[in-house]
Image (cartoon, rainbow, N blue to C red; front, side):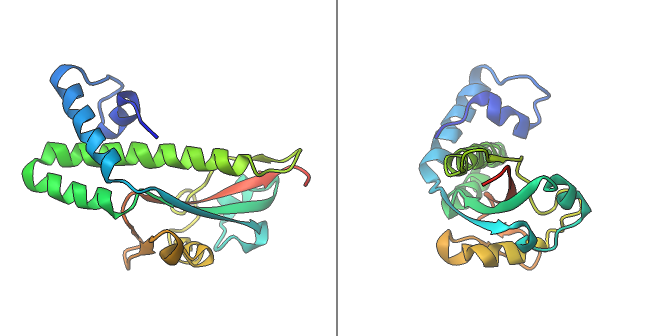
Amino acid sequence: MDVSLAEIAPYLRMGGSLPEGELASRISDVKARVAKAMRPLRVWRRVGKGEVPMMGESLRAHLSSCSDVYLVCATLGPGVDSLQRAAGAVSAADALIVQAAGAAFIEKYMDETEDSIRALLLPGESLVSRYSPGYGDWPLEAQRDLLRILDASRTVGVSLGSSLLMAPSKSVSAAIGVKGAP
């Protein structure tokens, strides 16, 4: 798995421009360190729509055409967090690049996860876009039940702190609806 400078740049708030010259080289070097530090893992489980925890109106509307839902958790692992702390002790700029590259990598990994799930679908089924706790009116607190259902602490090493932030920090949880007739 790889990400491009164009995929990292939005996380650096570059306003649509792409890094060039020395900055592009620095980002590429840090990106390579992130790629070496990460150990991507993921877990998913197909459940009935009624099993999605704490569903609000916006998620209910998003899943209105769906019968089932894949609950998903993916992470890049603790190595990226360690790399970001180490980089921050030396260079705030490098720590920011680690954060941005990590964000781009976890999004790419979630895209790959969706592709893997799509390959499991029955004829006539398709996926709706993923939806994570904290979007719309689906509360972050829903992550507690979502991670419990997936046994994410044991299966992929993702836990939830009292502030509802996941550890490792480059982790994503989501619901992906399945529409169509099985």
